[in-house]
Length: 301
Image (cartoon, rainbow, N blue to C red; front, side):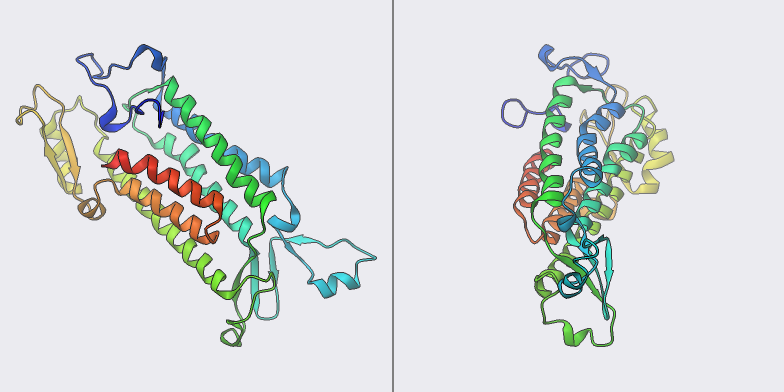
């Protein structure tokens, strides 16, 4: 729907005088409940991450070697090298960047596929079948690219935390995986950026969800009294203020909404920018960042 038709979201939803105010074309297909539709949207990404972690991975990429090269050579005749999630050395603790990024990807889509649909309002609009199929196609391809790259593609090295007293003296040397300390710092900054964007996204989604708590059937004056003032929301109407003949709209005045029209979208773009940064701007992560921006920015303008 990105290039053939305009996805019916937000201001692009075709309106009419029908009871629910929406008039989808016949070829959009039947509509499904929003909760179930969102689960279908996002679950391919979550399923790919689970499948790749348990069934389809390269241990040398997703995990760390328990022994260094010298130690492994001493025991090569007795045991195979062992993959580990964490490796503690004399003055540092390391974890595979690939595994960390896979966990971040899974965390985001566990929220999107499971938690977010459960918290949606009961009066959310149903979603046409064509939108569901289009979204599932995108998330299926994206989940495959991201998860297979992290589990079987290229090793991004180690994410290291210095714990020894000589940590500052070791900061300029390469890590055990051959990646520079600068790359390690870039990955940490990316992780912080990812969680910052996630926090903005979750907070903004919560504000919007609560503004819609009572639905359009409740009297606007009562809704404003019970909720709007407490969240700093301004009640407006696009039909000259005649609330008896049109649907009221709310403009949130919480901190993020004061500076960005759609901070929920901006937060998600920031999330995936942090994800790309943490992966040292790998091709799949940058491609996903560009697609996310191309998807969300037009919907937020």
